[in-house]
Length: 322
Image: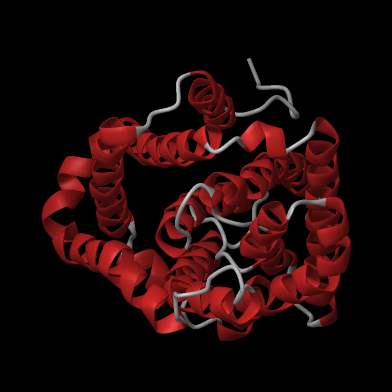
């Protein structure tokens, strides 16, 4: 049976369960310290496996389409942050400073990889170019996201220079990723029949980081700081951001003369933000209980983008080729 279009995916349901668990049974003290160490190891393993899974042939196939990739990168790291800055006065009026920081952090994150490629494939778009664009966005995000955080969230990130953030992310995310790429020839045959198990590893790493971050935030009184009306406001802000980016990516793609297949790539890769990269980056770039509040906008945006893009992918798939 086909999943109803607006039914949350399994990962979103698991995220909700983890937030509820952290709200009722938050970890603290020595247990929290043990989980912190475990999450660092899990994140390194997560990016090692991402490196090992990325096909070099698929990336090479899409690398020559530089106009498309540059367009996607400009949407992810220029226009998205600009929209966040333009909305900042309204964000500060509607949200707490920590949630405002979370929305701005969301705006400087790289694109998703797996879901962007999956939606492009469903929509009958240029899958090779999607692999290249999404992968390039994540690799460049290792350097660009800390730099943009330092520039746009300087007050919140006091004590952490852009170079500090980049070095931490290089050590904890990029080096494991490169090691995975190097090990790919030996691991590829072993990984192929174990895709489902490896997907569970991806999800477990993210869920563990979310649990630890929310536990610390709960201990510090998270739900006393976020009223139900503020959650509604946050969902509305996420919807506005997503609608603007979907509209702009489509409009610009057509103005630049991209084919329908390439338009699909720009729309899906340029409008989406990565939970898989964003949660580990937040853990590295921000300290203390604010991390739970900072990743809350990303979690809401993640769910919204999946539901909306699933509908759009199906509509693109049903188009008549001329």
